[in-house]
Image (tube, rainbow, N blue to C red; front, top):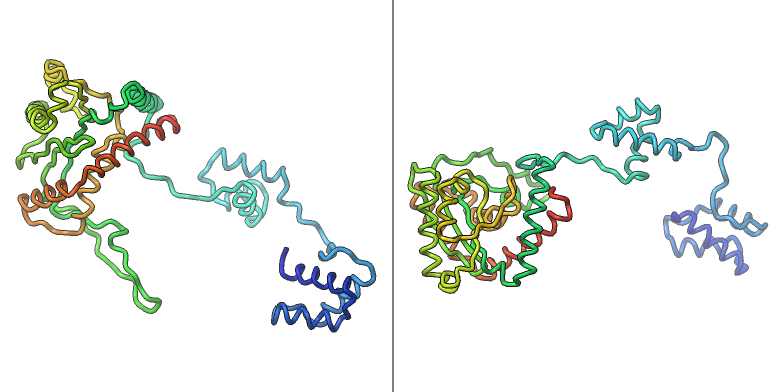
Length: 346
């Protein structure tokens, strides 16, 4: 109910109380101030209601009724959009014969739709890859159901480049500005060529093993096997309970160096159970969705001139993490299993 119709209801109430037109107008002005009905309109409605009118709505006007937003028109627009979701309102209007405004109202009001840009993702997954994502998440959930301590036995790890200069995020470079001040500007920047490769493994209690790859070296099967040897030594020293029981799981992604025959033979020889990880799924890798972004976030926008300085700052960031941070990471990982299953692998 709009304000005008609301005032007409008040007029009707005053008529029932036996108020005169002048008294009604005065009461409306007291209640609504400058937005009150004009004198002529107030007197006119006072007379109509006094003579027996009950409705406070406007009378139907002469002319052609608005029938463009019918069920048929709505179904037609829906079929067009479902057939091609990239159609513009003008294209829908031209194909359907409806006006631009009618098409806009049908899309936004009747169908509840809005136009948005496509979300950028690393890769569009095939149906088979989605099934593998769901299958891996179901197996992890089953393992957690069978063993409530399962998540505390997982050691997960990966490698990532850390740059001497990484541009700030959009939120980091935001400013408060007054209405009269100019909008802040910044030049487009790119990552520096000075970089170092960080390799980290952690569990629910904290970092188990971390190291930096020597400059000029890449991760291949030989290098990764040596890293795993040092990882097992770190577990023996830092996670004595897991080492003695042998009841722990290694989780890493499907990089070629991680899944090479040499590495698989080494892990099988030492009876290390490896958890399956679906392809193209950084959103299900704790290092990729939690640890590395947090380590790099505080370093974005800062410049480090050499590799030792980068490594020093990364090490400081890793040491700043509390045990509760790693517990939160693992809780997020478990929630992501549920989301992946619920979205059928998307």
